[in-house]
Image 1 (cartoon, rainbow, N blue to C red):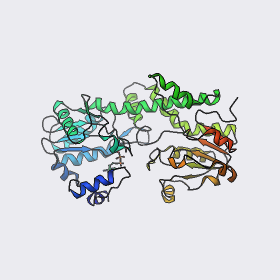
Image 2: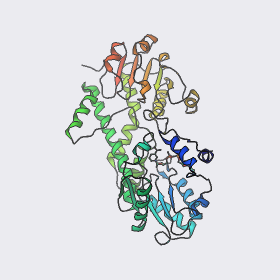
Image 3: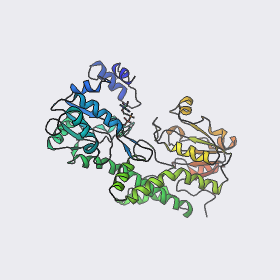
Image 4: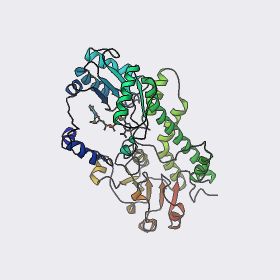
Length: 398
Ligand SMILES: NC(=O)c1ccc[n+]([C@@H]2O[C@H](COP(=O)([O-])OP(=O)(O)OC[C@H]3O[C@@H](n4cnc5c(N)ncnc54)[C@H](O)[C@@H]3O)[C@@H](O)[C@H]2O)c1
């Protein structure tokens, strides 16, 4: 299906600018697709691999899809070809788990017959084309020739600055560092926000001020962290690190803190308002980030599960998803007006200005603003009980 779409110039993804680009490439015959990887490999001077690596149930990295793709590439691999892996992997993954597959399947020797580099994909859905030419492309080669060839390739077609960090492992680590930094920073914000809720300080107000000293860069607290990357890739490092006998205490704690955000906020609400048992609770937002239709590891799932564990009746809405999409994701579509409690999970712009008074008239009593997106005063003036992340509710204020 994907191959057919590409052949007909249709863009199968929601990405600003991409449909137009694909039409252009289609017209000029510069984009083709195939499922015959071995044949494509045999015809290519350079091969970029970006099939996913998932987490196993016990949170270790699963290389099987990458290894399967490498086997197929190896079947057609020709002397002189450059293979670049872009999928996020554990440090050492390319050297230990992927290059041996290419060598075994092709009978060729890396560095002597073919070349390998690793270059993490660091783009952000919905901003891919906007950032492609400005986000430096990090590259690490198996050897100097591999690095030089990868740098030359990216410089030629990407136009972004290319940053050769020296080795496969350095390039793999660069991506994981970025993910860990975000996760730990958000966890810190979440913990400090929890303190502010009881101390009567608006965390968002002080976060902004703290960040003006040119040193601090505290990120936003929230109801949870979603997406393919931040909730997943820290494990690629922490599990590997444990295996080597080094415990990454801060990243491990950060994962736990961020995963527990939905449950923590629901317990806060239940303790101050009323038990959630039997309550109708409506979630706003399935997409893990504003403006996107991507629900991988969305906090909405953890929210739904935590609410159901507390015997609440859960509904959801998201302007990017049809009712059918929502059902397929395991949710019941609904509207805020039918609920007692509304939880904002995603700060989609369509949710920016709700009619709080209408909600209150319809029977909504309480809102949990999981993104500090709404005006607390406005909500309280309309008679709603407002809970924000790091913002004391009326019941917590001294
Ligand atoms: N999506 C993002 O925003 C993003 C951002 C940064 C980095 N990445 C990196 O890119 C990788 C791929 O992400 P994605 O969102 O494109 O993933 P994806 O699940 O959409 O898969 C990418 C491609 O791999 C193919 N594929 C999936 N499973 C396969 C299998 N078993 N055999 C053969 N082909 C298979 C899919 O058809 C698709 O064409 C991630 O693992 C990550 O390391 C993604």
